Image 1 (cartoon, rainbow, N blue to C red):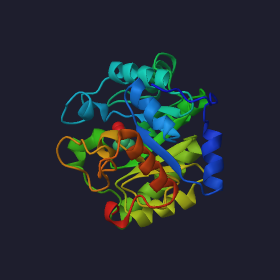
Image 2 (image 1 turned 90 degrees about the horizontal axis):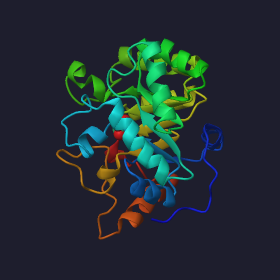
Image 3 (image 1 turned 120 degrees about the horizontal axis):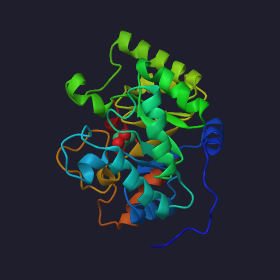
Length: 270
Ligand code: KIV
């Protein structure tokens, strides 16, 4: 495993500056030390220890059964394998039902998992929680749009914000979450035009997945990039290992495509 010489961690200020300078942010998920080092060496600036680990690591059907123990364990592995990337830990289903519960679990994720930011699937309901976390010095990424932890309520993995009412609500939630202190937003499966409007409307960096080219950065689940998705490949995913590349080459190709505005292409967007 090669360890980059650069030891200075990227911070949220780096991402704010990148947004101002219109430089794209390359993000990926990782769940262990080896892949954390690979993606970081390829130029990925943000690593998410996503609750997608439920599917890609544990073979579960959804993210719903993922636990705090799971995310803490995998976060610790990723943080050990990285030197430079900002590591974000996902707060699992039912781990942030009240501000108090969120504070306890975010503290655990930062202290035991070692992450530098936590991510919460967010809507109007989480505004107070985001504010309380921010007050206590916890950097928060608010995940809007398709929220896979609510899959049974949403009735499937569907694009969100398609009609006027839900689009207006998402725009409003994005502003309110920023106001409450969210340091970053993540938009999943959101129409490109709406994602572009949200990105232009907030000062914090906006990372997209299935949210078009105009977000400040892009993220994919690492396994989708490597063409080893279990089951149905999401429309927003792209297999970067095609053509006989090594894993390292595939991740570099992804970073290059994000940085040079070639990914996502129109066929990956809604
Ligand atoms: O859990 C995860 O990997 C995520 C990404 C899909 C953004 O939330």
